[in-house]
Length: 121
Image (cartoon, rainbow, N blue to C red; front, side):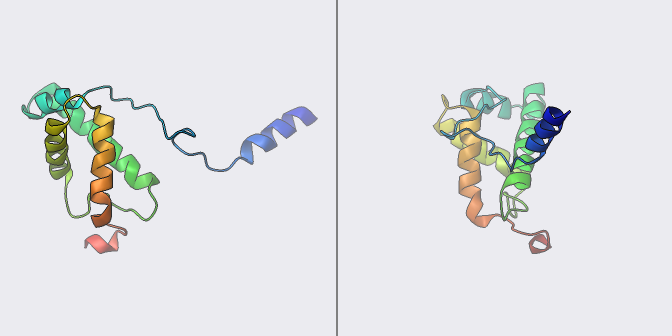
C-alpha cells in the first residue's frame, strides 16, 4: 500500500513537461511536404484542402493555448490569411515539411500576435 501511495504522489508531483524533447525535436503528425500543401491549396474544394485547413486551424489553436502571452498568434489575420502565408512559404520551400512551415509562420506572426482577448475588440 505504501508503494502505491508513493507512486501516486510522484505522479501528481511532476511539473509541466515541454512539448518537445531536449534537442527541440518533436513528432509532427502531419507528414505532408510543402509541395503537397501547395497542390492541395490550389483546389479549395478538394478533400485534402479541407483536411489541411482543419490541421492548420488545430495547430494554431494549440499554439494559442500553449504559447505564453498569446491570445491569437494570427493577430488581426484569419485562417485564410494564414493558409495563404503558408502557400507562399511552401512555394519557396517545396521539399520542407508542413510542420517547418508552421514554425516559420508562428515566428513571423509572433510580433503582431494578439496578446489578450480585449486587444482584438
